[in-house]
Image (cartoon, rainbow, N blue to C red; front, side, top):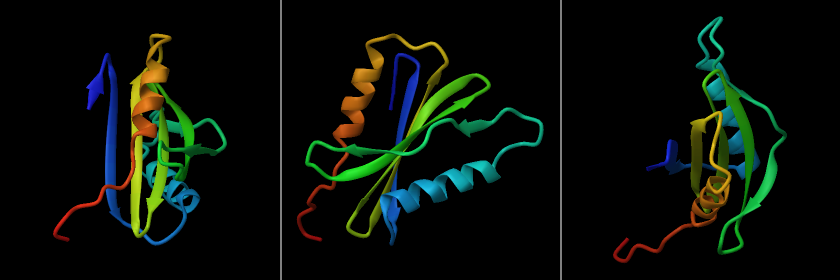
Length: 115
């Protein structure tokens, strides 16, 4: 999904571990994708605990790049790991962070009937 130059992508898959472990793995994977001598994305903050609307906890860290900045967040719901990546331009409207935070807080597991 994108909104005013900010892209939000949510990816989920089977995962056995904690949200902090998932975030560390995602960071390690992203570090391995960097192109030599290219700015790439660099995590610029320590992970912090985040909480969604239903009270479930995850972790998030900010990153910066040559032409963009963003946030990488992780939740683990049961045996499902969820990665949330938010990428936007270096300069962002002051009202957008609240909108992005609301989107991240809305991520939660849903019950699917018949499964």
